[in-house]
Length: 310
Length: 247
Image (cartoon, rainbow over all chains, first blue to last red; front, side, top):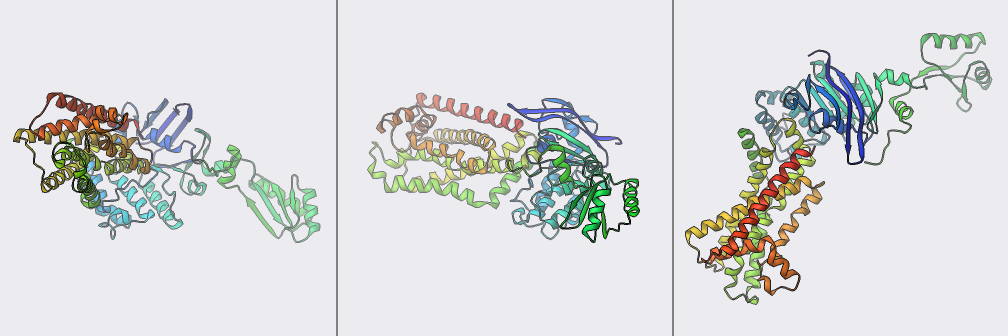
């Protein structure tokens, strides 16, 4: 399977009067990590449900692993693994029994994978304890291990690290990166900008059922105004001169800092530095500041990622 | 397909074994109610026959209903935790998932029914039923258990949260009290009386009562069976449709 692992065009879905998906287009190349980034209620889970055959879209076309999700749902299901928003583990069963359940339900699965998965996810010691005794991080790991039982080529992860502590989150990131290194395609949803930035090759920003931006994390950061250069000077005199000679500069007098809009290209930065040289100014500190994805979200949607309504 | 059903059933049976409290509740509560009404209050009711003989058919029904609370909870937990979605993506057929819950529920019910019959005999229960009539009693109880289990599975799927799932079975537990289970309907106040006369459980209880007394009446049996088949069909199709629709 080369080319696209997942493609969607013009996806629409409404529940009664409420439009949840308002024309979503996606193209996820095989062997990459694609992140759907958005606040609660943006339509992330609905998108995953449509792509994984759980929900029928009102309109639009979806192909996953080369199969149409409506016409060939069974073929799609054989190619994918899905880890939902909540750890879907059976708490009354042990870790090992949960994995055994997946093996029993999957005719293609090999029972020998169980020991390997327990080992890989550091669950061997806890394997014979009921999952109800597991920590949040362990449940998530077991959840993902259960998804991997059938060795799916395309994996959907709906908010894989929501509610995890920072250490478990890092572990999960490592696991996700390892999977892609083995050739798996991953579509994940997240509310964490850092997570998309850390993991994804491409990011689609979802807001109100629409994709408001798409690209690599760096492309998204470049797409919005706000990249600027910061100079810190030793005296107020130098600060005043710098504000006069540099176009568009703004000063923070208490910190003796000047901010100058700049696209971050070497030529533009060199021009700024030449200008300082010309006036014999010497900045004590210099940095190029690129906005993080939080700034991107604010610029693209007009609101921040903080959404209280669920 | 078939092996999926067996895997699912094995999972549900393991749940029962790991969570014996749910069976204990399903067995203990009906017995407590039975002791309360028959042993403590029984002499106060004048129903024309020995009270234990009057009350046992209704208490069989109550024993079935008490077992249902944990079923809606279990089904709802599978739904809200995403376990059902996981099974769906693995192409496990709806019938396999839901039938596992129904069979587990029926087994719990049968244990409770057995316990009630045992306690009834200890309290002096003296039925006049023939062997064939006993078989008919068991058949009706089994049908009742299967039918109400399907309804409860549907309710568990429909409930948005575990809290509501815990409440959906309450009407089923209350319904026997507003039937001829404890006292004859014609001794009740206006309004309640008409409700008790025409609600499904009264005809089912009257059918059981007739059989256990050795005098089955077609006038009771036919509506009882009609109700049971109706409840079964509604429950089964409601649960299956809800399962397919939800994601």
